[in-house]
Amino acid sequence: MTIKNIFMSAMCSACIILSNQCLAKTDLKNLPSYETWLEHASYLEKFWLHKDARGVPEGNFPTWRCNDGRLRNQSLCPYERDIGQMQHITGIDFVRMNTRQTFAYGALFNITGNKEALRLHMAGVKFLLEKIKDKEGGYHVLLEKGEPLGWPKDAPFTDYRLARTSQDLSYVLMALSMNAYLTHDKKIIDELREAQKYIYDTYYDKEKGIIRWCFSDTYFDKKEQVELVAMLDQLNAYLLLSWRLMPDTYKAEWGEIIRKTIKDMNKNFYSKKLNRFYGCTHDKSCFDTENGRHMDNGHRVKTFWMEYLAALGLNDKKLAKFAKKGMIQTLNGALTKNKNDWYGDDLQRGADWWVYAELDQSALTLALSNDYDMPDTLNKWVNDFTDKEYGEIKNFGLKTWFWRNGFHSTEHALIGTILSNAIRAKQCKNDKCRNDNKTTLHFAPVDLKDTSFTPYYYSGDITDVKRDGQTVSITFTNVDLPKAVK
Image (tube, rainbow, N blue to C red; front, side, top):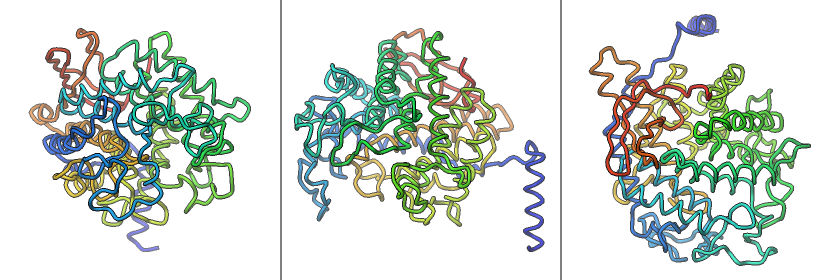
């Protein structure tokens, strides 16, 4: 071991013993300015406010569009030679993409205050409740021309109720949780409670401590699958964001649902030896750490991140320590040598758009508490990856298909906006600097007197409220990690 390595090892040991004296400190040059984030959001809006994005009727958002924003219309786009087997299903709309787009409009309104984005968000929620909700229970997951897919239950693709996956149902609630966050609408909050009960009553296997995947085989999904995301995406899609919005009499019970989901998830999918989660457990391939299903850095860091946010809400210090350790180890392993890019997996393949976003968001969360130095990955995203001609994020293949829509890019912009300002403000030495790094977010409360809003998952002090018709602009200071839910 070299003298340098001995010194660094000693410093690391000292930091563990005196952790409060060895805090990370992010280089502020790695944080895009507030103005840059707003400009970035406007480029995202360019793609999602395109006339072909709105659907017929509005709210029936299409799964398939070309990268220039135009509808695909079951054809190849001008620049394409082939999109493989996907070509055969471009007439089917996947509800999880519709609801991600509904989420995206809400996130864009939250950042920019653009009322057209809010109007489309509301249109998406209306379509969801009127067309996507299944009167027999749960929600439809596949549509054709705005109606539930009518193919028989033994077809390769079917909306048959027992073929719907628990993950797809959770993603429907992503749209409703964003709406509840923006509006505090009690009807939407009640809808979330009802839907959560349906999913857990239907899919939760008490004996095994898992949420079942589905109950009937289709082209993509088999009933024997045991999937991490069946549980993880309950947290990610709605449980955490809507937690603080639950009635006071129900918050503790909602918190216990979160706690039990995490406990079961860790019991069934976590490897202490590897300090990571297996993406599935139903066959041998699941345990292949290099090529196994969902063994990428995105699922790994997201699981720890969701558990960390949950631990803070639960005031569970042991879980918070466990999750933070996992986040840091994942981030360190994913960061490239030049510290301005992320690897997607242990084989050091490039990160997909959503993996990159999850790594950034996790790193920002830890940088907020000086537990991690935010690397220079955000500037590449807003400068190099942003498509300034057609909008959205480029460099990652198709912008819309049955596993990509506006969720990851807009959530990344929302968290990037909030936490870049917050981290800068924490390094300020005077009031002017802190004032310059306030964050203003926009909401649409059903009760205009209601100002009990938070900056997304995080906490903050409200210093200014401005009303404009049915919307309010709320300015936050002292933005910090989530507080315990009481």
